[in-house]
Length: 315
Image 1: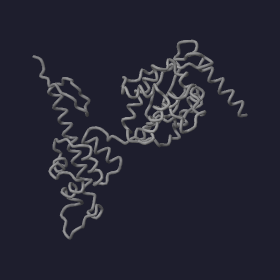
Image 2: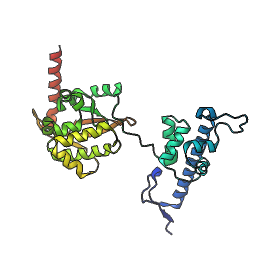
Image 3: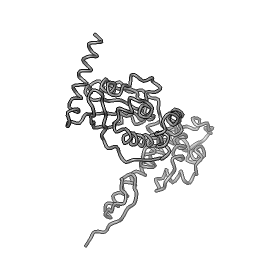
């Protein structure tokens, strides 16, 4: 006899999307979610009880049987329904909006880590952070890139500003030749003749990269510097203006890049992005020349020769 199955739809926390699961699996999921709701209830209660009325601008009163704030006080200060908040703190199976959670986080004076934990318990995902384009690259990443002597590597933010790079990347992309305000990967791709020639075939790679930038753009649509970058590019690049208005979203990165290096010809690279600071949207972009092909094999020698010449000039 075939085992009984339950077809479950989208379930974020367990990443089940249209999969068939057994009744036993479903019962296990339910038990896990019961534990999550219990943890959420205990967390909210503990955060509420640690606050005093005076900390939130309420009179202390002569007699208070409740430790910390009352539920009705939290609900009123957060601008949410008392019944809804009570159910949430009781661990009932309800869904609440991000605005609801943010209001609770504000009233309960949660720090960034506590707010993130609240979201993970209530919505099974971290909060959507506003796009941040200003940030500092950690020193350990600078050291890591210096160690990648034969691998071009650089760090970008949400706006695709190039914030740091190693010597190999500078040799290939000439980042140091650009003014800081124009040291931006998207600007270089569409407005800099050298970079336009470097990515060959340009159109295929530029379309794909623009599609990936659009995914970053939705995280920071209100950031003035990102909006200004788009307006500037629309003025100087007809291709950018046309493609941006098409709103195309391509699939995942193919994991390769093809560059035409003047002294070598075409060189194929494996290409990857590694998140190094999720909160600040910092990513390390890494290129590794593929092993097949004479030009690819000559890439390491070309970099070594360049490094030796630079060393001799500095002596």
